[in-house]
Length: 77
Image (cartoon, rainbow, N blue to C red; front, top):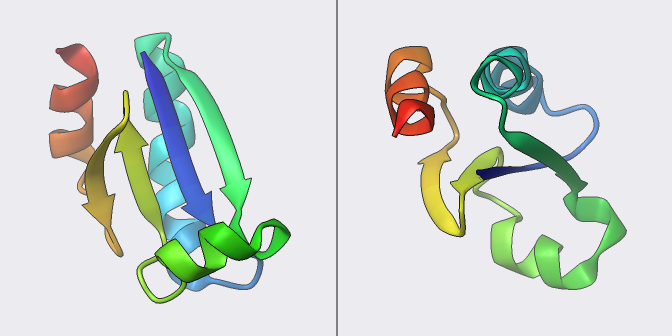
């Protein structure tokens, strides 16, 4: 399972999301890929006002806020 976290520095919602996503992905044995949208103009256009965004195996799971229980359930399959 692959979890992508789209974020940018200085974003307090991104920091809140990472505090949930990082340990939950690790506990589930998922591969976590963190993306700084400022490094890629296409990502900036796609996710600019939506971050943080969590994508699990190519499907968008969460935008702006991450619910720990919902994420845990999705990672459990």
